[in-house]
Length: 365
Image (cartoon, rainbow, N blue to C red; front, top):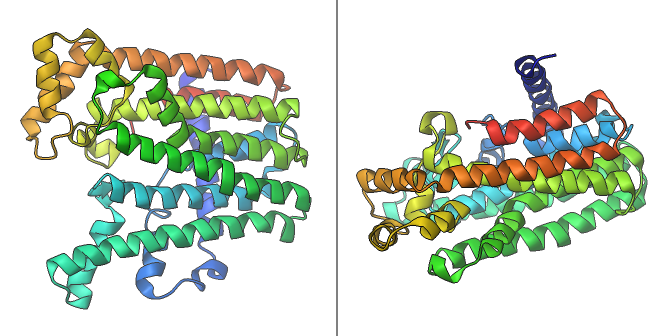
């Protein structure tokens, strides 16, 4: 099977997992829990807006790769998508983003609805939108834990494994993820010269890759029905997903500079206005002349930068080779990830994981 044919098969498999997750989450068992209407609508806004469900997919595939029945991992796959979604609503607030997947972000949407449906003035409506988005994230965080309990209550997974997954999601994952989010904010206020490459990569790993790592580990634990994180298959899939997760974030940073806004469904250049300390910016400053550094420093982090200024910086980041260098680093992490799959027996799921790894660094959205 050629590369293009393999990718077509993979995308069909990916779409099928996304369908299963959305169908599970949209059952009346859950929809009936959420009220009033604005909370219910907001809880499902991102979940039903066409996300690729990459994290649930790696959990499903990891479960199958160790010989497990992936259908029994469905509550965990749904949980990880809901968990990821609450982080998006809060992240959009932190970054003041206005678009997500081609639609208004939650706080923007419910600011509008606050004006139109509740008659709020602009200032109160903006506060209302933020309030809805924060409360929605809180609800989804709790929902994700509730979904994990269904591994035992609905699918009879060992309670020991379920408890281990709940504990890890709410301690290891949450603590690392929130640490990464705050470091991202703090670093954007620091001179890029005061940071090391390692600082930036660690921050990116915490805010993105730790949840991917959990997806791989959870899938393996469920498939094997073991709570031992040191089992060789569990370790291999944890490391695989961890490295892929970091590569995913590096590719995300690249698309945030040179991506197609219509395909991405969000604003290209927002990282420049936010002054995000990505590896792209770090590598650019290593190569830039004094004048170029001054120019970059003037626009990076300037929320009022014009479209032309943002485009100039994006072109300069490409010209200095920073985008290409970041892409090389991302592909190196994928190569390291694929080495971990050698621990696993050959299977259709192992091939899907390998294709998934290639996909995340070659995607355009």
